[in-house]
Amino acid sequence: MTAPESLRAPVGAPRQSAWRGQAPVVAMVALGGALGATARYAVALQWPTRTGGFPWATFWTNVVGCAVIGVFMVVITEVWAAHRLVRPFVGTGVLGGFTTFSTYAVDIQKLVENGRPATGLAYLAATLLAALTAVWLAATTTRRVLKRRQP
Image (cartoon, rainbow, N blue to C red; front, side, top):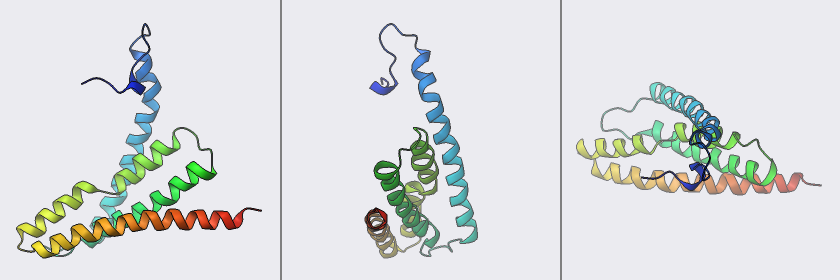
């Protein structure tokens, strides 16, 4: 496998230069991911799912995280010229670590294994629909609010 074009060093340049340029981005994603995953874990500890029960903590974590992604992306792409490390830290790191596809998939598997396939299917569809709706609503609402504030 070869590195993506953005990570490849120019011809004749030392190989290290590409890594040095990306090291701060990787560090910000890692730091943000640790913070986001810690927050998600705290939510799961405070709102545990009983065996065979609907995984509300993961559901709401994903929905809220998607709503925040909607607001964040509008703000940093349409309003604020953010530092180049803000998007990797907050968008990919914090929000990527907070929202969780892997736990969502495991929750569905557990529901099916515990004889609750209908609940698993409902959870699968409801999370997808709610998360997409949340990001769209948040982005749309943010644009409207910001438009009203302009002179």
